[in-house]
Image (cartoon, rainbow, N blue to C red; front, side, top):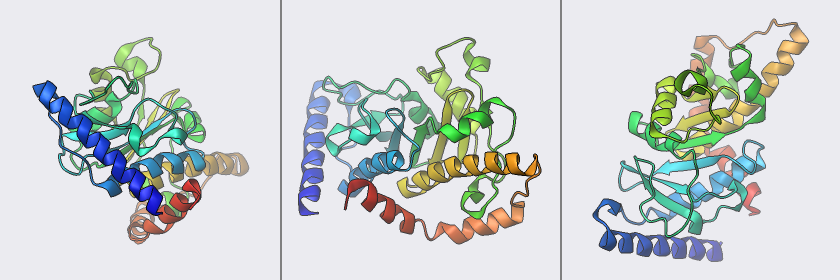
Length: 268
């Protein structure tokens, strides 16, 4: 534990030194400064947890809004989520450009994060995944709906964003600010949006919440497909009132799975 915290502290110091150099070199690279070490540690943990839970694999990414400046967010350089360490984390502006890349490459779809943070001041963390069980719900017209209490946050509908409507034939990647804005508009005030033929985006007010939502969106999609197959299409979903009560009941317990997943994924 001591070694891990020293490593995180060292990474924060290195990030701060790099940002200071960027500030002296270019006005547009002004930084919010080093983030809270706990936020950095949790961001790394979120990447590992989502791989361990089968939501991320070699692709996908997680970000967190900077604790010092709401116009900045933190996200790893372009690397497989399971390999992310504190030293890989970069600071970004809402234009989705890194403050001090120092030769490190960024995810092509970083605009998902910048444009959602810009559109949703309430959002503090974002996950973009290719969560396998949700893909059929983005291409068939079958709506993703909560069928058990752990996925109550899906009540109210899960929108589907089709990149073809915004860009015509493409490589399906959100590689421009305009596409990021289009996706953010489709998300609206909801916690999850599906991306046709691609994956999903989940948002939350904290890293534990967005990880919880990402995990249980995947689980609900898998269970819903099973229920539809078993029931011949007839499934009893949570009513709006049931969903509201279940979500409120679970809200205060997110620390329980978070600590379990964190310990398991990082081998502690």
